[in-house]
Every structure is written in structure tokens, then in C-alpha cells.
Length: 420
Image 1 (tube, rainbow, N blue to C red):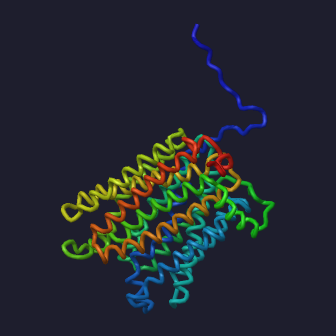
Image 2: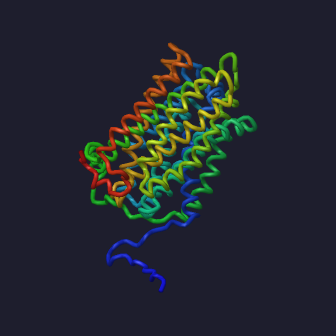
Image 3: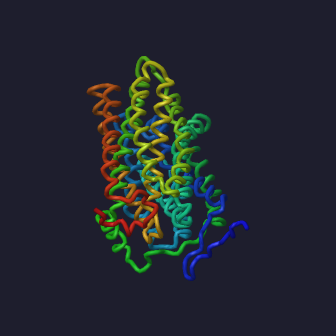
């Protein structure tokens, strides 16, 4: 007699397994991509903005600075609101405000209003992106959380990479203002889709005051061992990322390459391959292989610097290095998020805000270090620096294994606080 197939039912009072429809997962990915793109549209438009608003070559960087200031403020002040307010309503209100900011930027007549618009775009674009990732993590069941977060993160990567290409193409045809008008139109379509399809999520920290909510972020940073460890891993990974992307334009725009900004930006499209691997990394984290995925990714990231160092000999070496760098980085990033979101946490929005603070610090340190080293030791010095940071990340990950379970997805973050 064949073995009887037994279907296990959930225990009374336990939550039923949740499986998000594919259309909802796709919506999260598209929404994340369209939201984060608003933060990066300005980068290929700096020449046009300087010409229209009278900025000099030395001062036009203030446009990017204002955008990044908005990003930092969003992480500290807006993203945590997802744990205090109903997330669906919060996302819709923020998207309406983002549409207003896009229209204001497109019609700015003075440098003051342009910079104000850029601050608002950084603020609301980042709040939408990270809020949607937290929303996706909370909407997904624990068995599929890595996959869903990976899909959303894949949307972020594609949106980030295509933003520069889209901005440059539209600006060349119809001027820089049309870039933000097109984005506003896309945001209106997104608003309609989110209104119809975004699942409602009740607040998890409604009893807290806003001040207590922000103070609780400090508690998460000091008590959540998984957040601390995976945050340091993120800091080192994003520092390595920033070392490459901040310095890459310097040798490629100089002899013997003398590539245009559009040609240099095209190399960024290679990073889409990394986005395609992000969801796979999330699935492996769901299956309990998050630590193994992290170790392999660090090895790939370390190996990437050899072909990157050889780009003077062939552009194919640069392409291979970018593929390895981005694939490894996205695998680490998605696995990090899957681990810090593991279990039924009541603080997903605050967790993602705290986690992205590590990203901001790592990216800033990497950018400053890369340009300084390039001025002193050239491209080979930059690649050596990137390799050393990647090796540090690999060694830190190996050291941290004793402080975490083999798979962080097997336990909730609360269970891992204070493990030593």
C-alpha cells in the first residue's frame, strides 16, 4: 500500500501561510524602480542645470548634495512612519507629494526652487522606495519573504541604472524639464495601480508616539545583533561598490579612452544582470542558505577587482568585473534584508531605515576614499583599495558566523538579539 499523504493544517490561532500574487510582487518591483529613479535623474543633467540656473562647475554638485540630504532625512524621519501609520495610506500620500515635487522641479524658475525640489525628490523618492520594501517584506509570508524582497530590490537596481539612461535620452530630445514631467506622468499611473492593488497593512507600533518611534531606532541599533552584523557587512559592501562607481568615470573620461558620459553610463546597464540575480539570492535565504550565499558573494566581489584592474588592456575585462561586482553586491544586499526581516517583526520600517544608514555611511566613505586614492595612486590603487575592503568584508563575515545561526531566516530577529 502506498504511503498516505498527510496534509498538515496550521494550528488554531496560527497565521495561515501567505503567498503574494505574482502581479503584486511585480507591482512592488515596478513601484520601487520608478520611485528610486527620481533620486538619480539629475546626475546626467548637471551640465544643463548649471547652464540654466547659473551654477559654476565647482558649485553644481550642490544639486546632488541636496538630493542626498533628502535621502538621509527620509531614512531618519519618514521611513520609520511605516510602523506607526497604515502603510498603504502612507505610500499613497507620499506618492501624491512626490508628484507635486516633480511638477515643482520641472517648473522651477530660480536656483532656490530647483534645490528645494531636489531636496523633496530625495526625501520622497527614498521614503517611497524603502517604505515599499518594508511593505513588501510585511505583506509576504515568512517562507517567501526573501524572494519578494529580492524582487523589490531588483526593481530598485533596474530603476537606479535606467534612470540615468532615461534622463539623458529624454533631455537630449526635449530638454531636462521634460524628464521630470515624464516622471510625474509615470507617478500618476503608479498611483492608480497602488490604489487598486496595494494590500492594506495595519500599523504595528500605533501605541508609540512619533518621538518614541524615532528613539526606538536607537534601541534597534544597539540591541539587534543581526542588524548590527548584517549592517556592518552592508557598510563594507557598499563602500566597495562606491569605490568603483565613484572612480570609474575618472580613467574612462581621460586618455586613452576619452569616453563620453553617455558611453560611460552605458556600462551601468551591465549591472542589470545583478538585479536578475537578486531574487535568486533571496530564494536561497528563504531556504536557509543565506550565510553560504553571503560567503560566495564576498569571494566573487573580491575576484571582481582583478578584471577591473585590467580594463586598460580590454573593455571586456571591465564588463566582466562589473558583472561580478554587481551580482555579488546584490546577492549580499538582498540576503542582508531577508535576514533582518526574518520572522514576524513589528518594526520592518524602522529596520530598513536603520539598515540603510549603514549603506549611507559606507557609500560616503567609499566615494571619498576612491577619489583620494585615485589622485595618489591611479586606477590600480583604486582596485587595490576595493580588493582590500572586499577582503575585510569576507573576513568579517567569516568571523561573524559564530555570533549568528547558520541561517538567520531560521530564527526571528528578536531571538538573535544579544547572541554572543
